[in-house]
Length: 216
Image (cartoon, rainbow, N blue to C red; front, side, top):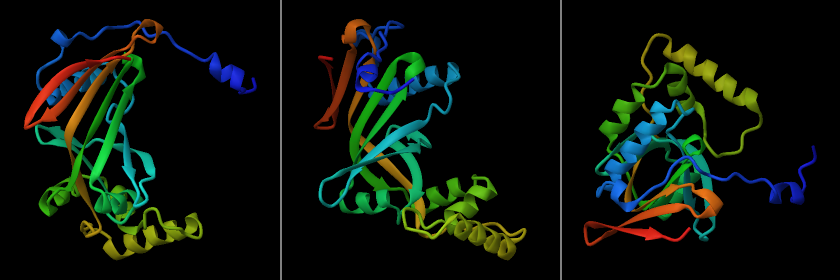
């Protein structure tokens, strides 16, 4: 089968598994997100914490990649990464980001926008110490987003650190840690028939969440 424009134009799915009414949505969008996330877990969706993280570079050009949600509470959404990576440099210059979760099995999407702050060192260290040793080593040796000569370069760095550390614990490097996205907008999207999707939007206005419905 050849992927042509005609093929792509005719590739569609009519969503029909559920609906979303304003009365069904909690007044606190974080609570509502946690409910939907639990539904995704209960549905045994593969890695329900996968999310797209979108940032912008110094020229305002968008940049997006997949990362993993590693915490959510009333303050916001947490993830961990290399501070010297492309995303880390972009967030330093422009501390705003967007997140997108898509759970196709449930025909649901959540879009989040907000400000971004680094988590404190203690929180980052506590999470780092829960990671498998191989992941800890990877975080130390990988110059994320930088050009490297080949994969052997990384593999050699891994072996060097393994030899040095032996049974010793791996310390969190200074260039690695967590961020929290503090939301100012959260949208819940439920797929519906004929592309007439349900979209319930929350915006933080003067410290209070305002809920509205958006046209699909």
